[in-house]
Length: 140
Image (cartoon, rainbow, N blue to C red; front, side, top):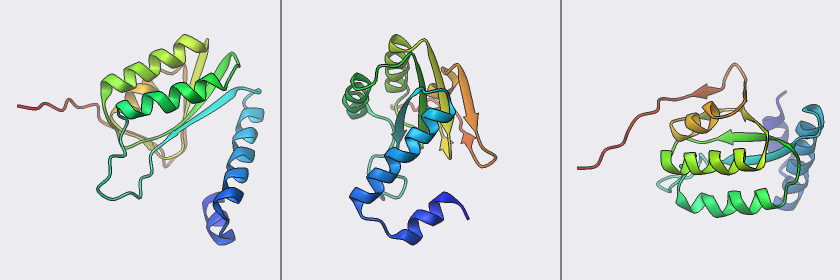
């Protein structure tokens, strides 16, 4: 049984889920050589709400990076896309702080997520993980 089903069956409260999330991020950090771990993940279940990478993501990413102090980072990334310019800003922040950045894609990182992934030193994916097209969105 996969981890996701296990958590659904437990019906954890938000606080319990938060404790479990931190425990799992620690497992990733330990397995990868005590690296910092940062998660950028969209709520893919939101309907008609902005879930792509956008300008409002800069402050939370900056804030989370200020709490980390390692030399290498593992970025867990899950996004349907978003603004390429903001993806570029995030990449600059990550490489400005870390000598090595790996991107872990458990599901998919489309469009702007692909830009971030391709800027990493290492990309870790599973058989169900996917990168997506990098297509320009032109407005007339």
